[in-house]
Amino acid sequence: MKNTAIIIPTRLAARRFPNKPLAKINNIPMIIHVLNRAKESQVGEVYVATPDKEIFDIVNDNGGVAILSEGDHNSGSDRVHEIYLKKLENNVDLIINLQGDMPNIKPSCITRLEKLMRSSGCDIGTLASDIKNTEELLNPNIVKVCTNEELKADAFLEAKDFFRIKKDLQKDRIYHHIGIYAFTNVALSKYVRLSRSKLEKERNLEQMRALENKMMIKVGWSNSTPLGIDTELELKKVIKEMN
Image 1 (cartoon, rainbow, N blue to C red):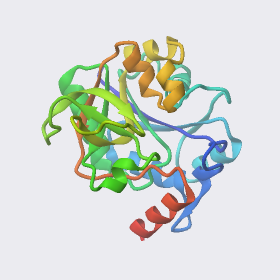
Image 2: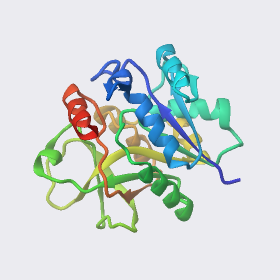
Image 3: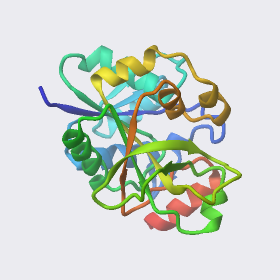
Image 4: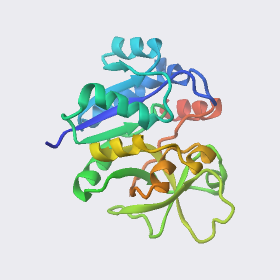
């Protein structure tokens, strides 16, 4: 069995930007842009996981498949796992968690991650791109990932750390982390059984739960940098770019 599914976890109650899945870009809600990019990748069936009836209705009215989830989850990956159990268990072996705030992600990025996972046999995979300038490096809204080796076009390297702000940046190979994860079905089930970790809470980064419990995350390089929208300013930047 080699089947892939994309699950997009999203909710209205985001702490930094409430109701952002419904924010309009070119008169289309953000979550619909993300849904369409996921469908265009053609790697597998696409589902939106949400506790909110308003998102549920908008997705289904726009040709998507939304599934209502429980409201209380520690992370997006926990929400993804709920939908995996409800709809996909025993039908897929690879689950892609695509964050619902990247309306300008290229479908080719999703396709690339799926191919890297299929060829490597690792448990968890993600993507990163080059950091363009010091402002980006120091921006706490942008998550960074560092690796021991240089992240080249054909590489799939073990992630050393993920962070938003770090004091000593001299020796690390640091990249702009992209909010997409691919889990094997076994790794996803293992991940959700783990308690929230210390650095997961401190940094508000769900991937730290995996790292702190010795689960390997590998990183592939992307030639584009879709911006995760956490603020109104970032929304304005993406609207300008997508126009």
